[in-house]
Amino acid sequence: VIGCEYVPLGLATGITIREGFGRETVVNAVREALFRWLWPLPPGGPQGDGIVVTDAHVMNFCGISGDFASIHIDDEAAREAGFERRVAHGLLGLAMTDGLKNLSRVRFKAGIASLGWQWKFRRPLYIGDRICARITVRSKRSSSKPERGVLTLGIELTNQHGEILQDGETVLLLRCAS
Image (tube, rainbow, N blue to C red; front, side, top):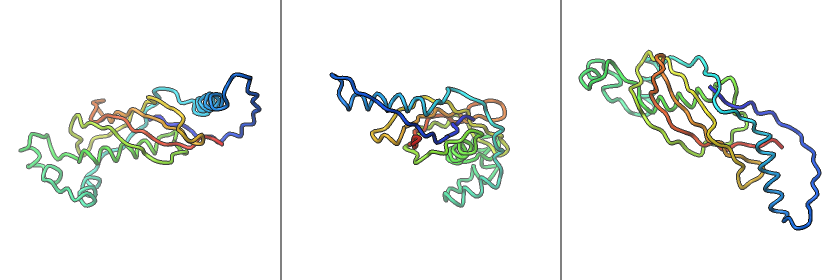
């Protein structure tokens, strides 16, 4: 699982604007350059050990979500529906993916908010699966506010067999170093 280790940096710089260049153009160029320098996030990265989906996870999610569909609580009903055994909720997989992102060895300590998710459910998530999140940086840019940046991450949730169960992307609003 990849993330970024946020290290606040003190940066003192003097800028002289040459004649013929607008202040806004220069400020935006410097902001973008500093953002790239302050957020040196590489693509790809190491994958963590993951987590095993347990019966307790599924039953607690049933209670939280109110989704007590028989495929989540009854092996026979799950088999009748075409699954090998009870299936964990797809949204539980997404929630656990976000948790794996937040528990990665390298963390997004400067996170302000999640701006959204685009997500697909590819294969069933079973109780007993060991899941890992493979995270890549898809893009990063400064926002309209100079103290903030926007980071887009691509994420694949895989099981112990390396099969992609769920995938998509999330967009995060982050604080830039001051």
